[in-house]
Amino acid sequence: MLDFLSVKEIPTLFWTSPKPLTIRPPLVSVVILLFGISLFSLGEALLVVAGVGVSPWTVLAQGAAHTTGCSIGTATFIASLIVLMAWFPLKQVPGIGTVINAVVVAVALDYALPYLPTFEAFYFKLAQAIMGIILIGLGSAIYLIANLGPGPRDGLMTGLQKVTNFPMSVVRNSIELTVVFCGWLLGGTLGVGTVLFALSIGPFISMFMYWLKQFFSKI
Image (cartoon, rainbow, N blue to C red; front, side, top):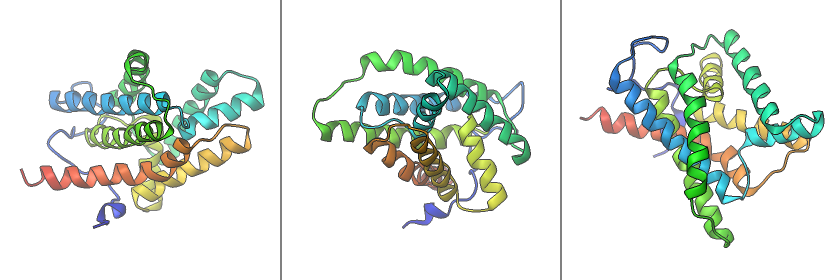
């Protein structure tokens, strides 16, 4: 029943591109990549508007900004650069998905946030955050299966998984918990949503990869 927690590789399905670094990717790969990233972006927006805790990487950016005096945006950019540099020893290959991820998420957040409902009751806020985390997990699974290049943090996850051979859920949760702890030490602000994200995003990504493989392999 919990077999998905042992997932160690990204499945190959009908929308998987033969290689991540290509100037002529299959159309189906690009279309489903965009769909996955859109779900991911909507999940990020729901997590933000819920107001019960930002993602672990934003906590790290807050802490870094608090310590260095730079803006959160600058701290986020620097963190992304550091993560991308970590790709080289991990032998991760970027692709158009790496660029599309950054662009679409930023644009989608700007457009989605004004239209999403806000709630006063804590339980509704919590439900909104949980739905956001679920969509981030589903969107991540879909766009990673497209094999057109992961986002910076997902690339760190897949690279470390190959090096350690640990299940993807363990690797991702370890990354998020480490980031949360470092951000908290630097003065970042935690919330219930932050903790939920750090503890559940790895299992959700693995679960959706497992379910997608099980479903589409039978078609």
